[in-house]
Structure formats: structure tokens, C-alpha cells
Amino acid sequence: MKITREIKTERLVIRKFERGDFEAFHNFMTDPEATKYLLFSNEQKTENGIRELFDYTINSYSEDMDAVSFAIAIKNTNDYIGSVGYAPDFNGKDIQIYWSINREFQNNGYATEATKALLQNLKSQSEKKIRAYCHIENASSEAVAEKVGMKDLGILFIKEIAQESRVFET
Image (cartoon, rainbow, N blue to C red; front, side, top):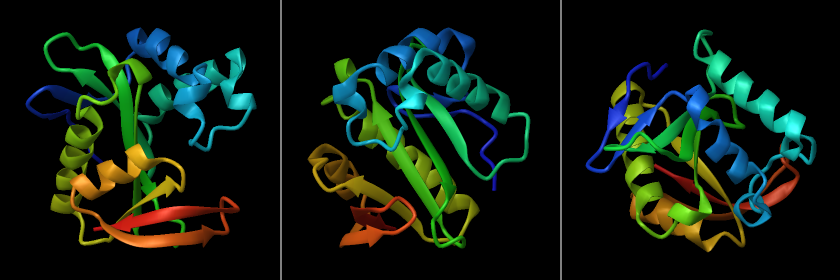
């Protein structure tokens, strides 16, 4: 499954990352508060790591990849405000999704709007279950999963990441 076109919502466009997104992406990756619940390694948060991750993401669109990351941008300005994406689930047969919003754009419903649009697009292409894994202290992310209609399966230990997560599923 591959989403190849932009997804537009009332206020947002979910699109491929563009070179002009780097500064805002860099700001996100160097904000310890914004990334504290995310599974980025310390190396990925260095200058070289940020550049490599950004370049990898942009170059990934030309390949047939199962894991895809998209930029979330304001529709009328095309300004990057976060990201949303999907990958194979840890069980190897389903899909997992993620979302993040740069801190200065949080609490405006953007994560919910983007995640809902991504979910609708994925559901239209696949019968697979879709899961989201939220850090157990990340109440904001849990709220997004609930608002988009995902079912709370509770807190489970995820051996692949060696931590407990609150798991949501469609």
C-alpha cells in the first residue's frame, strides 16, 4: 500500500516532505519538550542525525517503501507544522501510524485533523487493523487517538521498543 497523492483537509495538506521544510523539522527535532515521548535516538537529534533523517525521508518517496512519513502543512501557506505517517506494525501483518505537531502549533486540533485524514485514506486501501502506540505519559497523543475513533486496548509492553505503551486500534 502506498499513498502517492496529497491529502487535503479543511485547514491542512498532508504531503511529501520538501527541502523547504528543513528548518521547521530541525526546530522540532532540537526541541526536547516536543520529542520527549518519541523514539528518536540521541544520534538522530544531532545536527548530522537530523540532516540524515530528513534526507532519508525525502529520498524514500522514490522507493517502494512500506514506511512513509508525510509533512503536515497549513493549506493556505504550505508551512510545515508537523508530520504523520505509517509503517508495518510490530506484528508484521497490520499497520501502525504516528503523528507529531511542532510545539508552537499544538492545541489547535491539527494532529486530530491530519490523523483522521490519514486513517480514512489507509482504511480505503486496506482491511488491515491500524494501531497507534502512545507513550504512557503522553496524554495529548492519547486524546488524538480517542478523537479519531481508535479503541483503547490499554497499556501493553512492546518488546520491540522495550517499553510500555498505551495501544489504540481501529
